[in-house]
Picture 1 (tube, rainbow, N blue to C red):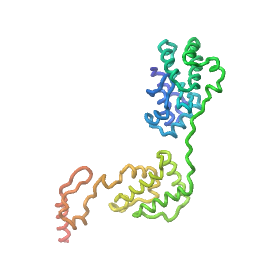
Picture 2: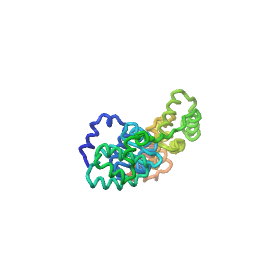
Picture 3: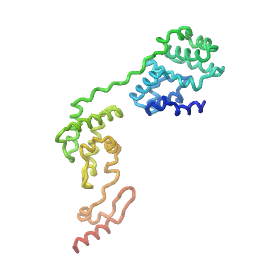
Length: 302
C-alpha cells in the first residue's frame, strides 16, 4: 500500500474533473478486494453489488476511463485492466513477480494479458520476458501490435428508448385515474410536458420499470389522508407530484397514514365521548376523555 500516492489523487486536476460516479468507480477499481494485480474480473457483478453503481453508470464510467487511457476493458470476458493500480502497487520484487504470474495466468482475456505484459515491460524490462513466457504472451507482439492489444472495446452504454408523447400522456392519465380525490389535470401545457419528460428521465435513471414506480406513487398518494387534504386545508396536486423530491418522499412513505395514526377530532369526540385513548406519533396520550368531556361541556354552556 502506498497511501501517499493515493492521497495525491485529490490534488490531480483530471481526477477532480471526474463526476462523482466515475470517481467512485476509479476508487473501486483501485481498492476492490476482487482486483488481482491490476485486473478486475466480473466487474459488472462486483461494481453494482459493492460500489452501488447502476449498469448504466458503470458502463458510462468504464467508457470514460478507457477513453482516458487508464483502463482497458474486454467485454467478452468482463475483465478490466486498471493501470493506476499498477502505477501504485507494481514492483520488481520476486514476491510481486510470483504473484503476478499466478494472477495473470488466470486472466481469461488474451488481450488483457498482453496489455498487462506490455505495461510491465515498459517499466521493468529486465523481468518482462520471464513473466511473458510464464503467462503465454509473445512480448514482441505485445510491444508492436498496439492496435490489437491496447485499444479494447469500451462497454456499450445501454440505450433507453425515447420518451414519447404517449409516455407523457400515460403519466397524466394514470394520475387522473388513480388520484380521484385530487384536482384533475385539465390541460397539458408545454411547461407540464417539459416537467413530465424531466421526471420520466430521472425515474428511468434510478428504476428499471419507471411506469410501475409512478403508478405506485399515485396509489400511495390517493391512500394518504394528508395528501388528500383531509387533515389540513392543503392537498397535493399533479404539479406538486411532478417535483422529483416530493415524489421520493411519497414513495418512501413519509405521508403514509400508518406512520402517524389519525388523532381524534372534535367531531369524533362528539360522536363518541369515550374515545379516550389514542396514539399520536410514538407516544400514547390518555387524556382523550378529559378533552372530549371538557369540550362537550363548553359547547353546552355556549
